[in-house]
Image (cartoon, rainbow, N blue to C red; front, side):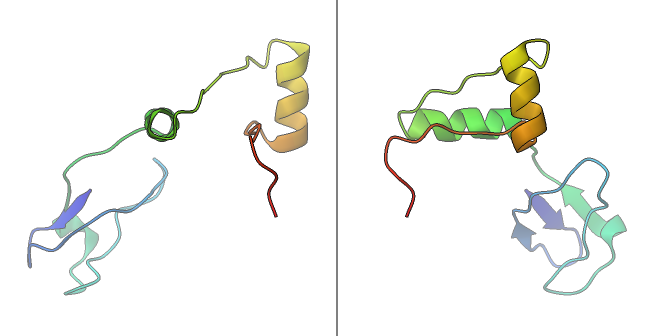
Length: 86
């Protein structure tokens, strides 16, 4: 959750740790006037979404054969779905 110190506009955005804060989309103030109000890690966000959807979240270590295959084949992120995707 970000807030522009100049105009007070607040918005949500997903960023990696290496990305800079963006300019304000309302008043185009530079990123040095943008304040980060809150942040959440990807793992915490996925855990929260899984809980809301009555789903289970599992972590598989890359130290196992299955985890290594998952990392190579899918980049480390996969899901087993209850219903077919169409």
